[in-house]
Image (cartoon, rainbow, N blue to C red; front, side, top):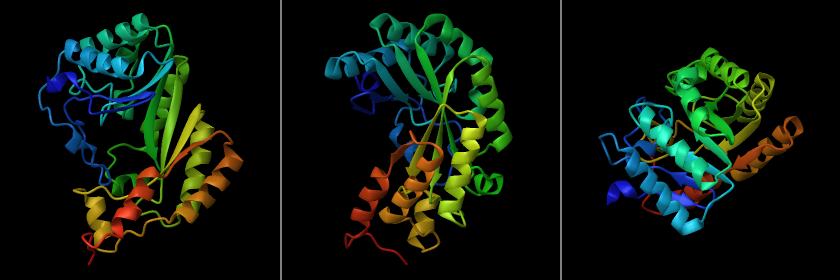
Length: 261
């Protein structure tokens, strides 16, 4: 029964249960622990997860699909399962879908079979994080800006929508404001249709959490994040922003059981 239940859902969003991210080395990401299944799930298992969502929320016009990694990673979701999912979503009347993927999986041979089954709007999201190759290496992202540019160029050539996630206040950034603004400008120049600005925070069990605990990573405060948002909206007025994780972490970090050196 576990395989038929998504990890999390909320209106407009589903987080699929599946094996963990094949890369799994980003120092700030703790989502791998959510993936408690190690073996490949069947297409039927995935469709049942979507049915659970529809039973709870109904059929949405737009659905954000996450899976603690890359939707286009064959080790997380097989090509046949992806086809079954997109066929099912189109049959159910979900007219707009967003998926997330690392750049290396954004390939024509991965996307074309989905577009054969699905005639709605498809947005492919990339966790750019920061437009700086040096910082990307330190964050252990495992890709470069050239990889992002190649993936984005392909998405544009195929007429697909794209979204870039930018992580503000991440470890190893010298100036959070400057780095965030440069990253927003970079994503806009590449032609991303949407940009999401996220406030970085430490996830337990990650190297990033240890950096914070040792005092080697200073987090943004909410006022600093708000100032970055104001500046970013001068560049991209419709930019999406979220500091929920940071806000909750700052609350929790004030509790006596959270200790730092």
